[in-house]
Picture 1 (tube, rainbow, N blue to C red):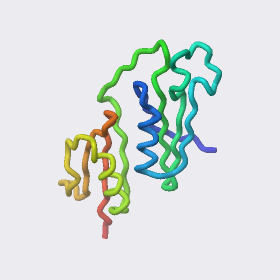
Picture 2: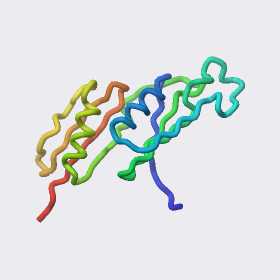
Picture 3: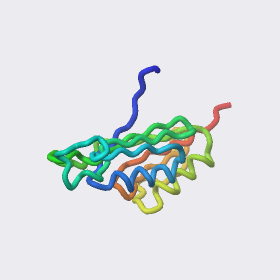
Picture 4: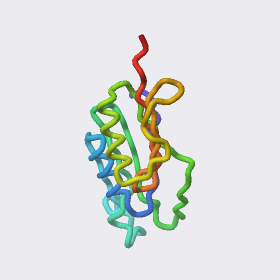
Length: 138
């Protein structure tokens, strides 16, 4: 298998809900493993929290996430964004509508100076998403 690069998002106890939400947005197969599944004796109250999750979609997207491990500090920040781009306007607008639905739009999904349709939003879990619909070049 070739090397690959995937976004891996840390959550503050709501990884299950977030990853199930993303499955609802993008479809695909979702694997959820808890700290308890891996026999983490030190997990205690975190036994049902997500130690590792992976969403693999039919479009070839892979998104990973987990709850912050017990004993580690959760540090949210604006240093991560997830970009979804392509030429299928209907598919990408569908993702946009779901991601921005209960979130905050910082750049409306509209034609930009570089010619593509682009938008930026922060979903209800605090994750920033960049959606770019490429104009088909003739």
